[in-house]
Amino acid sequence: MLKRLFLALLFMAPLTAAAQLPDFTELVEKQGPAVVNISTMQSARNPLLPQAPNLQEDDPFYEFFRRFIPQPGPGGPREFQSQSLGSGFIISQDGYILTNAHVVETADEITVKLTDKREFKAKVIGADRRTDIALIKIDATGLPAVKVGDPNKLRVGEWVLAIGSPFGFENTVTAGIVSAKGRALPQENYVPFIQTDVAVNPGNSGGPLFNLRGEVVGINSQIYSRTGGFMGLSFAIPIDVANDIAQQLRTSGKVSRGRIGVVIQSVTKELADGFGLPRPQGALVNSVEKGGPAEKAGVEPGDVILRFDGKAVASSEDLPRIVGATKPGSKVTMQLWRNKTSRDVQVVIVEMQDDRSARQARRGSKPPAAAPSQYGLTLSDLTDIQRGELKISGGVLVENAQGASARAGIRRSDVILAVNNQDVKSVEQFNQMMGQFDKGRIVALLIRRGTNSLYIPFRVDSN
Image (tube, rainbow, N blue to C red; front, side, top):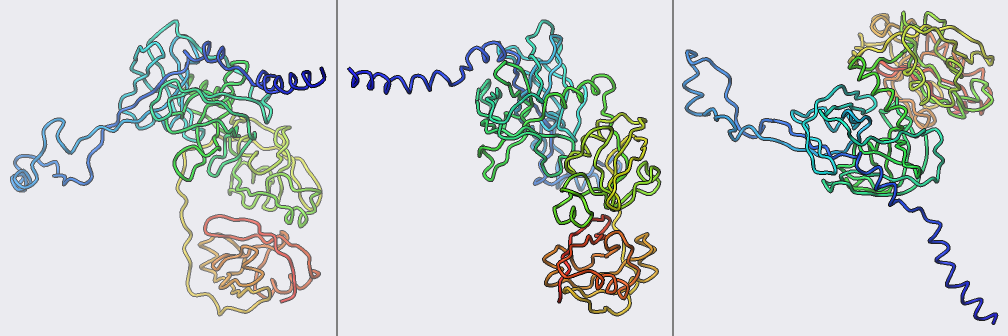
């Protein structure tokens, strides 16, 4: 009897485990029709074929180019069409669709295909490169629309599901779990990505990420891959971020973001110790825009921004998102850490302009002879011309960096501006300042590198 009972329990165990796995069939049946396939066409010229200049018939060189580089007729070999595929999802019954900006930004023609095989030409209402969100519209009514969820309620380890068109295979369903939340990616300062292990491939871009309640919680946007295919790391834009962008695009055709005019970096444990912070947190200000909102509010290089408009700044990645989401013209309170104490300042947010190219500062005339220092540094004083062109009043030039300084991240041609927020005026002064610290003490060196500034934690040690 006991043996039979044991065998019965043994065979039931797999069934019990299987019963606990989620069933996605009802979700796909209800929400799948709101997911669309997006194909785009772009016209381009073949760069490998010779191109004749556009000349008038009375130009003396017209006959030469006509004879040796004939102009093709319409649809000639120098013109070709390139096609790309992506995904999207309907957010309103009157035909508004969300997708990625990179899916449609270069398109001459956009075609949207529904699950019932109907096809529509779409127009772009607006696109935002910084968040990779685009809003497009088709001329239709009574369409199935998705339900929108709250990505803030997502939990790491929770099941999620993606529907899209990887490699053109329409309405492909893949599932996985939430691997992480609030993930920051290089050059992506305005999106706290949802990381999943849902299989996402080229063609999934712009498609929805669903939770088990059938609610869209994100837009599949990127993968991390060394092969070009899925490797277990995919990233989705939270739907609340996307909806805010879509609303602005629908209302005004553009996105308005706030800025305060600072350049920031992360606070490492070593820098936190140097600034007397209880723990690594906040965003370290390494330069302040002259005449910008932060300078007017009294923000200085070396300040650590701990809170902004009542929101905690846990890391430097948080600040651009919080400031960017703040309405231009608003006056908000910002909490700073300076000289081992916190203080509040009031800052007025201004609107972020289009991306501007930075002008590289030029070096002036030959500086005075380099002077050896400790810690593997060879330093020289800057000339007045160099300081004028760099728009700085002090600093010393790094002619060479070896040993401890190189390991800390200091490079040749860096300019050391300050030590623990005390300005450096000369090589002699720098050596005197460093000589006052005990062996093993970590200090924060403010470095000017090109047009940017950054803090480098440096451990004082004997040479």
